Image (cartoon, rainbow, N blue to C red; front, side, top):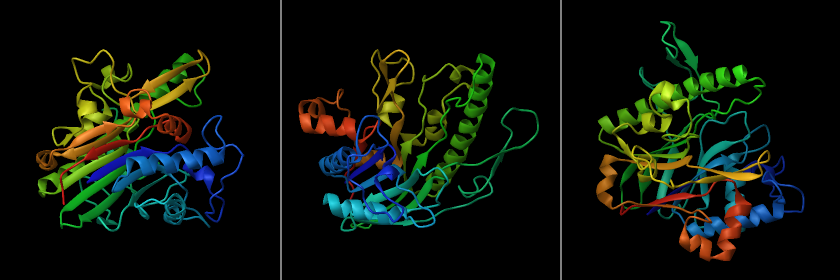
Length: 331
């Protein structure tokens, strides 16, 4: 079976207030790409990766008249995807939902949020002393992770968690001092979210369950200078010794000369593209015996994607992130 995570940049921009797909010449959420081009590109990429289940990050909005699942299922029908049913969890206020698009002939998935004293429900509040001042800080997710109970056609049970952690970028800061202060505060919040998420993973692992964490964690080992202040990245906290992702683990020391990446952003100031490893498919130790094989569908780093001109362009037009898949021998 193939599982994927895909951050589809501002997917919500392709739908009107009644979830009708808008494929026209107006701008999409991707810089320099119209809605028709982005929509066709997303469909091309999803058909090409042909995953049994895709954790969609920045999925269409749920609101007063909109429903994430309705929009995704309409898109899947229009694109001819076999992953044609959708499930989502707690909606958020960012117009960037988290949802799973899956093939109902291969597996069943349902929203199944959990809560414990150590790790409350993801739409709640997590109390932790972030700055070691003996005062508990209250942390919330702007995008609550999606917890799923999944059963494959062969009867294998999986716990899947889709996540989109807070960005560490100091948005709104103007002076150097403001940038530093905000970056550190954001880093603290992201570390708390990672601890919260790891505690849930630990509970599932302790119960002997198969666990997968998929999504955009906006972080990675060695990604920025603030990691020295806190000792490790939030990605390493989420993984601990319970989860595996070779791309993340490969960035731990000694680092490769050219690390892998899952995203590509344009920096208008120096007119260059920035590459970063932000998207992950992490699996529990219990799934490592099922011969997992990971792949980043990068238009310039994956040889097959680069050689396929249509796929290469579709990946660039669809999003500033690229899909990550893992193939596992599970029935």
